[in-house]
Image (cartoon, rainbow, N blue to C red; front, side, top):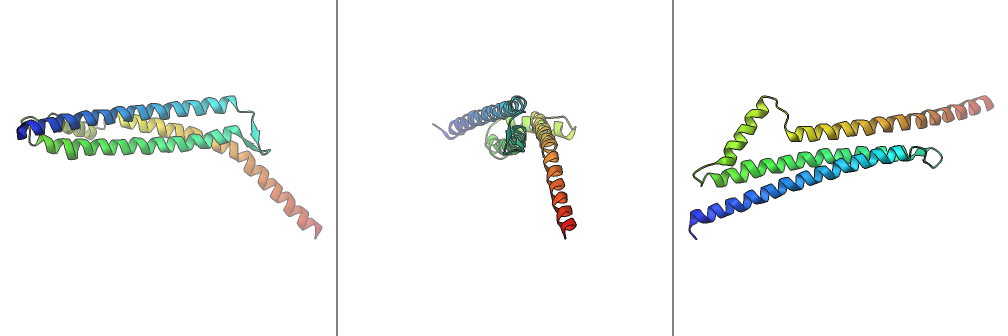
Length: 166
């Protein structure tokens, strides 16, 4: 096997690995989407469940939802970074040794479209993750507010009783 053939085989192998990596990225996003949907349904179906006399199942699932959404955002960001490295750092360097450079040209086209503010798929994934996080955060606030108000009222009652008793 000569040098050119070896380079071509490494290139093919790495391109296949990159495609498998992208497939794992899609599978991971499906997992996070399913987790968010399950948490929403769990909040709906356990809305009347209360723990420790005040903490609702809705609050617990909302906190989990914020956490899952944050992890989803970070995961999308990490995959995007790694995919960019695979394109720009590795595949493009291998393509320098090849007569044509399809991924280099493709990456240049993607970079050009980003300048025109076109939404990329990863932007949509991040938007969905952020929307889910905001939804779960709003639910958390709506569930925590009565707890904070009740705790504040108890503190004021105790303060007035102590002040009035002295």
